[in-house]
Every structure is written in structure tokens, then in C-alpha cells.
Image (cartoon, rainbow, N blue to C red; front, side, top):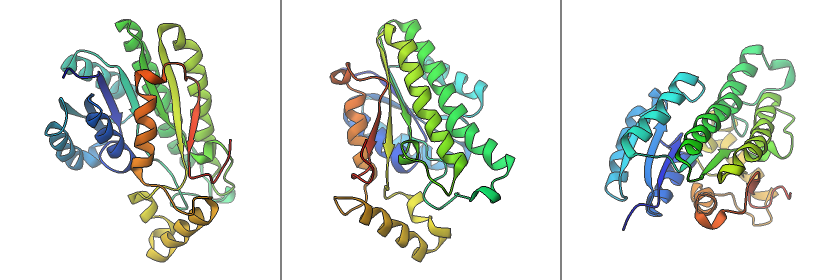
Length: 260
């Protein structure tokens, strides 16, 4: 069976990004995986695992907040696999009570670091993936990582909330510009998801993490928190040909803790 296309997943060494990459490989995509140098060993092992399950895989270490590295990563993926059909942002920066700071505690460095990764990094991925897909002339799928914090403000963390609202705006603007080329641009907005970030929340203590877990469980009509595969299931559809009439949307996958 021929591959369905070439997908690049950033932040793929662990958590949501890893689940998404695994699902896209199972769906038949050639999957290129990315993460930072700090996660390079985990990323390498995961890329080797993917090669045993899907059509092909490759690993690309890059910091998505650095323009030259993003541009180079896209070029490397295309050079190795011949094209880029889907780019998916699986990164998580900030999160439930882990990095949140109240207004008086937020510094310029906090603001710049959060916006650099979550907003600027998203822009760079959208930009260079979009330009590559336009050059190819066969459409594509661009998918960003938002959050429940991008739908409803979080009082404890202004920079994180602002950065995730920025992802929604970037998604809509990119959808308007790239749509004429057959490229759809959407984002997913998770709520409470059982990941390493969740487990390290609440000040790093097991008790604190459990309080966060219980909070999200109580807020959900389903009375549970999500797992990375819940996000991957949604992304699988957005990345497919069947989603061709959906663009500019930020889709909530949050167990109903917030209704659009």
C-alpha cells in the first residue's frame, strides 16, 4: 500500500505529540518527528519504533522558536521524503498549574519565553509549511496546538492564555491566506489530558497533581480526564482527505469542560 502522504509532527518525543505521530503512522503516513535537543534520545528511540510500524520515519532535532531551524527542518523533511503534506504541532508549553504565575509574578522573560514558543513558533511552522505546500501545488493540512486556555482565559497565567489565543488567530489568518491553494489550517484545543506534564503539575508533588486531575474530572460532564489518544483520534480526521471542508477552526477536545 502506498503512503497516504508525508506528515511532520513537532514535539513528538512524548505526550500528545507522540500519540499523534503514532496514530498518523498507523493511518499510513510517512511520519517525520521533531523535538528539541533535550529530548533527542527519546525522539531517536521513538523514530526507530515508528520505522517498525509504518511506511517510513525520520527524526529532526530543532527548536521551533528559531526561524533558521524551522526552515531547515522543513527542507530536510522534503529532501528526505520528497514532499510535505501535513504538519502537526504536538508541543506543550505551559500547562495546568505547572508554569502558571499570577500577574505580579510574571516577568518580561516569562512573557517572551512563552510567546516565543507558543505564538512565534506556531507562526514559523505555519509559514514554512504553507510555503512548501503552495510550491508543491497539491494542497495540504496544517494543524496547530491550542488549549482550553485559548478558548477561555485563565486568570493564573496571562502569557500562556495570550499565546494560546494567538494560536487561534494565526490559525484563522493562515486559513484565509492558504485556502485558495487547497490547504486547510485548523488547531486542536485540549483540556485536561493525562500526560507527563499533567503528572508533574501542582508544584511537582503527587498530591498537587492529583488535585489538578480531580479538578478537570469534576469539570467534565464525562467525569474523566482525557488521554493523548483522544487528541490523536481528532487529529487523524483533521489530517485526512475527508476533512477537506473544515478550515480556520480550533476544535475543542476537552471532555466538555468548556462548551464552544
